[in-house]
Amino acid sequence: MASLKTSVHGIDFENPFLLASAPPTALVESIDKAFSLGWGGAVIKTITPDDLEMFEASPRYTTIKEKNKVIGFQNIELLSHETVKYWCDGIRFLKEKHPTKVIIASIMAPVEREEWQSLVKILNDTPIDAFELNFSCPHGMPERNIGMAIGTSAEISILITSWVKSVAKKPVFVKLTPNVTDITWIANAVERAGADGFAAINTVQGFMGINLDTLEPNLCIDGHTTFGGCSGEIVKPIGLRCVAQIRQKSTLPILGMGGISNWQDAAQYIAAGSDVVQICTEVMINGYVIINKLKSGLLNYLEEKGMSNISELKNAAVSKITSHNDLNKNYHIYPQVDKNKCIQCGKCVTICSESEHSALSKADNQIEVNRNNCVGCSLCSHVCTQNAITMQT
Ligand SMILES: Cc1cc2nc3c(=O)[nH]c(=O)nc-3n(C[C@H](O)[C@H](O)[C@H](O)COP(=O)(O)O)c2cc1C
Image: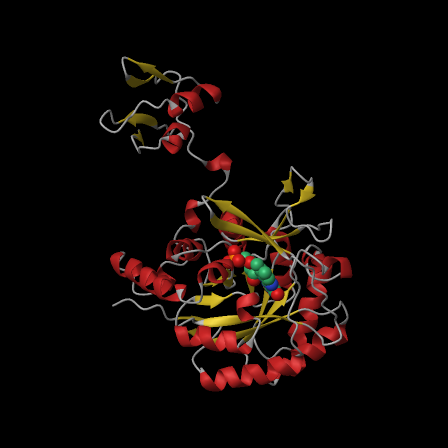
Protein backbone atom coordinates (compact mmCIF):
# COMPACT_ATOMS: atom_id res chain seq x y z
CA MET A 1 0.00 0.00 0.00
CA ALA A 2 1.57 3.31 -1.10
CA SER A 3 1.49 6.45 1.02
CA LEU A 4 1.48 10.14 0.14
CA LYS A 5 3.13 11.07 3.45
CA THR A 6 6.46 12.77 3.20
CA SER A 7 8.87 14.74 5.33
CA VAL A 8 11.04 17.78 4.60
CA HIS A 9 13.51 19.11 7.20
CA GLY A 10 11.54 17.25 9.89
CA ILE A 11 8.23 18.78 8.77
CA ASP A 12 5.68 16.00 8.24
CA PHE A 13 3.31 16.42 5.31
CA GLU A 14 0.27 14.11 5.18
CA ASN A 15 0.33 14.63 1.42
CA PRO A 16 2.59 16.66 -0.90
CA PHE A 17 -0.12 19.09 -2.05
CA LEU A 18 0.12 22.65 -0.71
CA LEU A 19 -1.78 25.77 -1.60
CA ALA A 20 0.66 28.33 -3.00
CA SER A 21 0.88 31.82 -1.49
CA ALA A 22 -1.92 33.58 -3.41
CA PRO A 23 -5.67 34.38 -3.27
CA PRO A 24 -6.61 30.83 -2.09
CA THR A 25 -4.58 31.51 1.08
CA ALA A 26 -5.52 35.17 1.56
CA LEU A 27 -7.95 34.51 4.42
CA VAL A 28 -7.87 32.26 7.48
CA GLU A 29 -11.33 30.84 6.70
CA SER A 30 -10.21 29.89 3.18
CA ILE A 31 -7.23 27.94 4.51
CA ASP A 32 -9.47 26.36 7.16
CA LYS A 33 -11.83 25.16 4.39
CA ALA A 34 -8.94 23.87 2.27
CA PHE A 35 -7.49 21.91 5.20
CA SER A 36 -10.89 20.36 5.94
CA LEU A 37 -11.06 19.26 2.30
CA GLY A 38 -7.69 17.49 2.53
CA TRP A 39 -4.87 19.81 1.45
CA GLY A 40 -1.58 18.88 3.10
CA GLY A 41 -0.52 22.45 3.77
CA ALA A 42 -0.74 26.09 2.82
CA VAL A 43 1.66 28.93 2.19
CA ILE A 44 -0.01 32.09 3.45
CA LYS A 45 -0.50 34.99 1.01
CA THR A 46 2.67 37.05 1.49
CA ILE A 47 2.65 38.86 4.85
CA THR A 48 4.34 42.28 5.01
CA PRO A 49 4.91 44.88 7.75
CA ASP A 50 1.61 46.66 8.45
CA ASP A 51 2.87 50.02 7.22
CA LEU A 52 3.74 48.72 3.73
CA GLU A 53 0.76 50.00 1.75
CA MET A 54 -1.04 47.79 -0.79
CA PHE A 55 -3.13 49.78 -3.28
CA GLU A 56 -4.64 47.39 -5.78
CA ALA A 57 -5.60 48.22 -9.39
CA SER A 58 -8.83 47.25 -11.14
CA PRO A 59 -8.97 45.08 -13.15
CA ARG A 60 -6.06 42.99 -11.89
CA TYR A 61 -6.35 39.93 -14.17
CA THR A 62 -6.48 38.96 -17.77
CA THR A 63 -6.46 35.41 -19.08
CA ILE A 64 -5.48 33.27 -22.04
CA LYS A 65 -8.00 30.69 -23.20
CA GLU A 66 -8.00 27.59 -25.37
CA LYS A 67 -11.42 26.49 -26.61
CA ASN A 68 -12.99 28.76 -23.99
CA LYS A 69 -11.03 27.12 -21.16
CA VAL A 70 -8.71 29.37 -19.16
CA ILE A 71 -5.18 28.01 -19.47
CA GLY A 72 -3.32 30.94 -17.96
CA PHE A 73 -3.61 34.14 -15.95
CA GLN A 74 -1.72 37.37 -16.06
CA ASN A 75 -2.22 39.15 -12.73
CA ILE A 76 -1.01 42.36 -11.13
CA GLU A 77 -2.24 41.60 -7.61
CA LEU A 78 -0.08 42.69 -4.69
CA LEU A 79 0.39 40.98 -1.31
CA SER A 80 -1.73 40.20 1.78
CA HIS A 81 -4.05 42.99 2.89
CA GLU A 82 -4.35 41.54 6.39
CA THR A 83 -2.30 42.72 9.36
CA VAL A 84 0.52 40.77 10.96
CA LYS A 85 -1.68 40.30 14.06
CA TYR A 86 -4.49 38.88 11.91
CA TRP A 87 -2.08 36.24 10.61
CA CYS A 88 -0.53 35.45 14.00
CA ASP A 89 -3.99 34.85 15.47
CA GLY A 90 -5.03 32.97 12.33
CA ILE A 91 -2.00 30.67 12.38
CA ARG A 92 -2.69 29.76 16.03
CA PHE A 93 -6.36 29.07 15.22
CA LEU A 94 -5.50 26.97 12.17
CA LYS A 95 -2.82 24.91 13.96
CA GLU A 96 -5.10 24.20 16.88
CA LYS A 97 -7.91 23.06 14.57
CA HIS A 98 -5.67 21.24 12.05
CA PRO A 99 -2.52 20.14 13.94
CA THR A 100 -1.37 17.79 11.18
CA LYS A 101 -1.39 20.44 8.45
CA VAL A 102 1.70 22.34 7.38
CA ILE A 103 1.55 26.14 7.54
CA ILE A 104 4.28 28.19 5.87
CA ALA A 105 4.50 31.95 6.33
CA SER A 106 5.43 33.78 3.13
CA ILE A 107 6.99 37.13 3.99
CA MET A 108 8.35 40.25 2.29
CA ALA A 109 9.65 43.54 3.69
CA PRO A 110 11.69 46.56 2.64
CA VAL A 111 15.41 45.86 2.31
CA GLU A 112 16.33 46.71 5.89
CA ARG A 113 17.62 44.24 8.45
CA GLU A 114 15.24 45.45 11.16
CA GLU A 115 12.17 45.16 8.90
CA TRP A 116 12.83 41.53 7.93
CA GLN A 117 14.03 40.42 11.33
CA SER A 118 11.16 41.92 13.32
CA LEU A 119 8.63 40.19 11.02
CA VAL A 120 10.45 36.89 11.47
CA LYS A 121 10.68 37.31 15.25
CA ILE A 122 6.93 37.96 15.56
CA LEU A 123 6.15 34.88 13.43
CA ASN A 124 8.70 32.80 15.37
CA ASP A 125 6.25 32.97 18.27
CA THR A 126 3.48 31.32 16.25
CA PRO A 127 3.24 27.60 15.42
CA ILE A 128 4.27 28.00 11.76
CA ASP A 129 6.32 25.20 10.22
CA ALA A 130 8.57 27.26 7.96
CA PHE A 131 9.20 30.61 6.30
CA GLU A 132 9.04 31.30 2.58
CA LEU A 133 10.86 34.48 1.54
CA ASN A 134 9.09 36.13 -1.38
CA PHE A 135 12.01 37.43 -3.46
CA SER A 136 10.03 37.04 -6.64
CA CYS A 137 6.79 39.03 -7.13
CA PRO A 138 7.27 40.54 -10.62
CA HIS A 139 4.83 43.48 -10.46
CA GLY A 140 4.32 46.49 -8.21
CA MET A 141 6.92 45.44 -5.68
CA PRO A 142 10.06 45.74 -7.86
CA GLU A 143 9.21 49.43 -8.33
CA ARG A 144 9.58 49.67 -4.57
CA ASN A 145 12.91 47.75 -4.70
CA ILE A 146 11.41 44.57 -3.30
CA GLY A 147 9.78 41.43 -4.75
CA MET A 148 11.60 40.44 -7.91
CA ALA A 149 14.04 43.34 -7.42
CA ILE A 150 15.48 41.22 -4.59
CA GLY A 151 15.41 37.88 -6.41
CA THR A 152 17.18 39.18 -9.50
CA SER A 153 20.14 40.34 -7.41
CA ALA A 154 22.39 37.70 -5.85
CA GLU A 155 23.87 40.29 -3.49
CA ILE A 156 20.54 41.45 -2.02
CA SER A 157 19.19 37.88 -1.92
CA ILE A 158 22.25 36.78 0.07
CA LEU A 159 21.93 39.73 2.43
CA ILE A 160 18.27 39.16 3.29
CA THR A 161 18.61 35.37 3.52
CA SER A 162 21.40 35.75 6.06
CA TRP A 163 19.43 38.35 8.08
CA VAL A 164 16.45 36.01 8.20
CA LYS A 165 18.49 32.90 8.93
CA SER A 166 20.22 34.54 11.86
CA VAL A 167 16.89 34.90 13.72
CA ALA A 168 14.48 32.35 12.20
CA LYS A 169 13.60 29.42 14.42
CA LYS A 170 12.07 27.46 11.54
CA PRO A 171 13.40 26.33 8.12
CA VAL A 172 13.70 29.09 5.54
CA PHE A 173 12.72 28.49 1.90
CA VAL A 174 13.51 31.16 -0.68
CA LYS A 175 10.87 31.66 -3.38
CA LEU A 176 12.71 32.28 -6.62
CA THR A 177 11.74 34.16 -9.75
CA PRO A 178 11.94 32.56 -13.20
CA ASN A 179 12.54 36.06 -14.62
CA VAL A 180 16.32 35.69 -14.63
CA THR A 181 18.78 34.27 -17.13
CA ASP A 182 19.84 31.43 -14.84
CA ILE A 183 17.73 30.57 -11.80
CA THR A 184 20.53 28.44 -10.33
CA TRP A 185 22.69 31.54 -9.95
CA ILE A 186 20.33 32.95 -7.30
CA ALA A 187 19.54 29.49 -5.87
CA ASN A 188 23.23 28.79 -5.29
CA ALA A 189 23.74 32.25 -3.79
CA VAL A 190 20.97 31.88 -1.19
CA GLU A 191 22.09 28.33 -0.43
CA ARG A 192 25.52 29.74 0.45
CA ALA A 193 23.76 32.32 2.63
CA GLY A 194 22.11 29.52 4.63
CA ALA A 195 18.72 28.95 2.95
CA ASP A 196 17.19 25.59 3.87
CA GLY A 197 15.49 25.13 0.52
CA PHE A 198 13.73 26.72 -2.41
CA ALA A 199 10.23 27.44 -3.65
CA ALA A 200 10.00 27.81 -7.43
CA ILE A 201 8.57 29.34 -9.45
CA ASN A 202 6.76 32.59 -8.82
CA THR A 203 4.87 34.03 -11.78
CA VAL A 204 6.51 34.62 -15.16
CA GLN A 205 6.52 38.27 -16.19
CA GLY A 206 4.40 38.73 -19.30
CA PHE A 207 2.21 40.94 -21.48
CA MET A 208 -0.85 38.92 -22.47
CA GLY A 209 -2.08 40.90 -25.45
CA ILE A 210 -3.52 43.96 -27.15
CA ASN A 211 -7.12 44.49 -28.29
CA LEU A 212 -6.77 45.31 -31.97
CA ASP A 213 -10.06 47.25 -32.12
CA THR A 214 -9.16 49.70 -29.37
CA LEU A 215 -5.39 49.17 -29.38
CA GLU A 216 -5.64 48.97 -25.61
CA PRO A 217 -3.79 46.27 -23.68
CA ASN A 218 -5.98 43.30 -22.64
CA LEU A 219 -5.31 44.12 -19.00
CA CYS A 220 -6.34 47.76 -19.18
CA ILE A 221 -6.61 49.98 -16.12
CA ASP A 222 -8.22 53.26 -17.19
CA GLY A 223 -6.28 53.26 -20.46
CA HIS A 224 -2.97 51.89 -19.24
CA THR A 225 -1.40 48.58 -18.30
CA THR A 226 1.69 47.28 -16.56
CA PHE A 227 3.54 43.99 -17.07
CA GLY A 228 2.15 41.27 -14.84
CA GLY A 229 2.81 37.75 -13.59
CA CYS A 230 1.67 34.80 -15.72
CA SER A 231 0.60 31.57 -14.09
CA GLY A 232 -1.36 28.41 -14.78
CA GLU A 233 -0.92 25.72 -17.44
CA ILE A 234 0.92 28.07 -19.82
CA VAL A 235 3.90 28.38 -17.45
CA LYS A 236 4.41 24.70 -16.64
CA PRO A 237 7.33 24.15 -19.05
CA ILE A 238 9.13 27.10 -17.44
CA GLY A 239 8.46 25.96 -13.88
CA LEU A 240 9.43 22.37 -14.58
CA ARG A 241 12.64 23.51 -16.26
CA CYS A 242 13.52 25.78 -13.32
CA VAL A 243 12.94 23.02 -10.76
CA ALA A 244 15.05 20.55 -12.74
CA GLN A 245 17.83 23.12 -13.14
CA ILE A 246 17.89 23.84 -9.42
CA ARG A 247 17.90 20.10 -8.65
CA GLN A 248 20.87 19.57 -10.96
CA LYS A 249 22.86 22.02 -8.82
CA SER A 250 21.52 21.46 -5.28
CA THR A 251 20.34 18.72 -2.95
CA LEU A 252 18.24 21.10 -0.80
CA PRO A 253 14.46 20.60 -0.70
CA ILE A 254 12.37 22.23 -3.43
CA LEU A 255 8.73 23.28 -3.08
CA GLY A 256 7.90 23.06 -6.79
CA MET A 257 5.13 24.93 -8.61
CA GLY A 258 4.04 26.65 -11.79
CA GLY A 259 1.13 25.44 -13.91
CA ILE A 260 0.27 22.29 -12.01
CA SER A 261 -3.29 21.44 -12.99
CA ASN A 262 -3.57 17.71 -12.30
CA TRP A 263 -1.80 14.82 -10.55
CA GLN A 264 0.25 14.07 -13.64
CA ASP A 265 1.80 17.54 -13.55
CA ALA A 266 2.50 17.10 -9.84
CA ALA A 267 4.15 13.71 -10.44
CA GLN A 268 6.34 15.29 -13.14
CA TYR A 269 7.40 18.08 -10.78
CA ILE A 270 8.37 15.46 -8.18
CA ALA A 271 10.26 13.40 -10.78
CA ALA A 272 12.08 16.61 -11.79
CA GLY A 273 13.25 17.21 -8.22
CA SER A 274 10.43 18.71 -6.13
CA ASP A 275 9.90 17.44 -2.60
CA VAL A 276 6.33 18.71 -2.44
CA VAL A 277 4.26 20.85 -4.80
CA GLN A 278 2.22 24.02 -4.55
CA ILE A 279 -0.78 25.05 -6.63
CA CYS A 280 -2.58 28.38 -7.09
CA THR A 281 -4.22 29.05 -10.48
CA GLU A 282 -5.87 25.64 -10.90
CA VAL A 283 -7.38 25.96 -7.42
CA MET A 284 -8.76 29.39 -8.29
CA ILE A 285 -10.33 28.04 -11.49
CA ASN A 286 -11.69 24.72 -10.25
CA GLY A 287 -11.88 25.05 -6.47
CA TYR A 288 -10.24 23.49 -3.42
CA VAL A 289 -12.07 20.21 -4.21
CA ILE A 290 -9.47 19.35 -6.86
CA ILE A 291 -7.45 17.97 -3.95
CA ASN A 292 -9.45 14.71 -4.08
CA LYS A 293 -8.41 13.90 -7.65
CA LEU A 294 -4.85 15.08 -7.02
CA LYS A 295 -4.43 12.72 -4.08
CA SER A 296 -6.17 9.69 -5.56
CA GLY A 297 -4.44 10.11 -8.93
CA LEU A 298 -0.96 10.34 -7.45
CA LEU A 299 -1.59 7.49 -5.03
CA ASN A 300 -2.84 5.18 -7.80
CA TYR A 301 0.16 6.09 -9.92
CA LEU A 302 2.61 5.25 -7.13
CA GLU A 303 0.88 1.91 -6.60
CA GLU A 304 0.88 1.08 -10.30
CA LYS A 305 4.59 1.86 -10.40
CA GLY A 306 5.24 -0.31 -7.32
CA MET A 307 6.51 2.73 -5.39
CA SER A 308 5.73 2.92 -1.69
CA ASN A 309 6.05 6.70 -1.34
CA ILE A 310 6.92 9.88 -3.23
CA SER A 311 10.57 9.81 -2.21
CA GLU A 312 10.91 6.91 -4.66
CA LEU A 313 9.56 9.15 -7.42
CA LYS A 314 11.56 12.21 -6.39
CA ASN A 315 14.40 13.04 -8.83
CA ALA A 316 13.52 9.98 -10.96
CA ALA A 317 13.89 11.95 -14.20
CA VAL A 318 16.80 14.17 -13.21
CA SER A 319 19.59 11.87 -14.40
CA LYS A 320 17.89 11.81 -17.82
CA ILE A 321 18.52 15.53 -18.32
CA THR A 322 21.89 16.37 -19.85
CA SER A 323 23.55 18.94 -22.08
CA HIS A 324 22.86 19.08 -25.83
CA ASN A 325 26.50 18.25 -26.33
CA ASP A 326 26.09 14.95 -24.51
CA LEU A 327 23.01 13.75 -26.41
CA ASN A 328 23.57 10.66 -28.58
CA LYS A 329 23.67 12.07 -32.10
CA ASN A 330 23.75 8.55 -33.60
CA TYR A 331 20.21 7.90 -32.40
CA HIS A 332 17.65 8.37 -35.21
CA ILE A 333 13.91 7.74 -35.38
CA TYR A 334 11.62 7.71 -38.43
CA PRO A 335 7.84 8.14 -38.88
CA GLN A 336 5.72 5.04 -39.34
CA VAL A 337 2.30 5.90 -40.77
CA ASP A 338 -0.67 3.68 -39.86
CA LYS A 339 -2.70 3.61 -43.11
CA ASN A 340 -5.84 2.54 -41.28
CA LYS A 341 -5.79 5.65 -39.09
CA CYS A 342 -4.45 8.19 -41.62
CA ILE A 343 -7.10 10.43 -43.24
CA GLN A 344 -4.54 12.04 -45.60
CA CYS A 345 -5.23 15.54 -44.34
CA GLY A 346 -1.69 16.45 -45.32
CA LYS A 347 -0.76 18.29 -42.09
CA CYS A 348 2.33 16.11 -41.72
CA VAL A 349 3.37 16.80 -45.32
CA THR A 350 2.96 20.56 -44.86
CA ILE A 351 4.93 20.81 -41.64
CA CYS A 352 7.69 18.60 -43.00
CA SER A 353 8.10 20.57 -46.24
CA GLU A 354 7.71 24.01 -44.64
CA SER A 355 10.16 23.01 -41.92
CA GLU A 356 12.90 22.33 -44.45
CA HIS A 357 13.05 18.59 -45.01
CA SER A 358 10.27 17.41 -47.40
CA ALA A 359 10.57 13.82 -46.29
CA LEU A 360 6.82 13.22 -46.47
CA SER A 361 4.62 13.26 -49.56
CA LYS A 362 1.12 12.26 -50.56
CA ALA A 363 1.07 9.61 -53.28
CA ASP A 364 -1.57 7.10 -54.30
CA ASN A 365 -3.82 8.28 -51.47
CA GLN A 366 -1.27 7.51 -48.83
CA ILE A 367 1.58 9.24 -47.05
CA GLU A 368 5.03 8.16 -48.12
CA VAL A 369 8.19 8.60 -46.09
CA ASN A 370 11.50 9.29 -47.80
CA ARG A 371 14.00 8.17 -45.19
CA ASN A 372 16.89 9.81 -47.01
CA ASN A 373 15.36 13.25 -46.42
CA CYS A 374 14.04 12.52 -42.92
CA VAL A 375 16.06 14.02 -40.07
CA GLY A 376 13.85 12.29 -37.48
CA CYS A 377 12.67 15.57 -35.96
CA SER A 378 9.26 14.02 -35.05
CA LEU A 379 7.18 17.12 -35.85
CA CYS A 380 4.92 15.14 -38.22
CA SER A 381 3.80 12.88 -35.37
CA HIS A 382 2.94 15.91 -33.20
CA VAL A 383 0.64 17.56 -35.76
CA CYS A 384 -1.19 14.37 -36.73
CA THR A 385 -4.77 14.70 -35.48
CA GLN A 386 -5.42 10.95 -35.82
CA ASN A 387 -2.42 9.60 -33.89
CA ALA A 388 -1.58 7.79 -37.10
CA ILE A 389 2.18 8.49 -36.94
CA THR A 390 4.54 6.79 -34.52
CA MET A 391 8.26 7.39 -34.49
CA GLN A 392 10.40 4.29 -34.57
CA THR A 393 14.12 3.47 -34.92
C1 LIG B 1 -3.44 36.35 -8.28
C2 LIG B 1 -2.14 35.79 -7.78
C3 LIG B 1 -1.58 36.30 -6.62
C4 LIG B 1 -0.36 35.81 -6.16
N1 LIG B 1 0.16 36.29 -5.00
C5 LIG B 1 1.32 35.81 -4.52
C6 LIG B 1 1.85 36.23 -3.28
O1 LIG B 1 1.25 37.04 -2.55
N2 LIG B 1 3.03 35.70 -2.88
C7 LIG B 1 3.72 34.78 -3.63
O2 LIG B 1 4.79 34.34 -3.21
N3 LIG B 1 3.23 34.34 -4.80
C8 LIG B 1 2.06 34.82 -5.26
N4 LIG B 1 1.53 34.33 -6.42
C9 LIG B 1 2.29 33.33 -7.21
C10 LIG B 1 1.84 31.90 -6.86
O3 LIG B 1 2.10 31.58 -5.52
C11 LIG B 1 2.58 30.88 -7.76
O4 LIG B 1 3.95 30.99 -7.54
C12 LIG B 1 2.30 31.07 -9.25
O5 LIG B 1 0.98 31.48 -9.47
C13 LIG B 1 2.58 29.79 -10.05
O6 LIG B 1 1.74 28.74 -9.64
P1 LIG B 1 0.37 28.36 -10.43
O7 LIG B 1 0.71 28.21 -11.88
O8 LIG B 1 -0.10 27.08 -9.77
O9 LIG B 1 -0.58 29.47 -10.19
C14 LIG B 1 0.30 34.80 -6.89
C15 LIG B 1 -0.28 34.29 -8.05
C16 LIG B 1 -1.49 34.76 -8.50
C17 LIG B 1 -2.10 34.17 -9.75
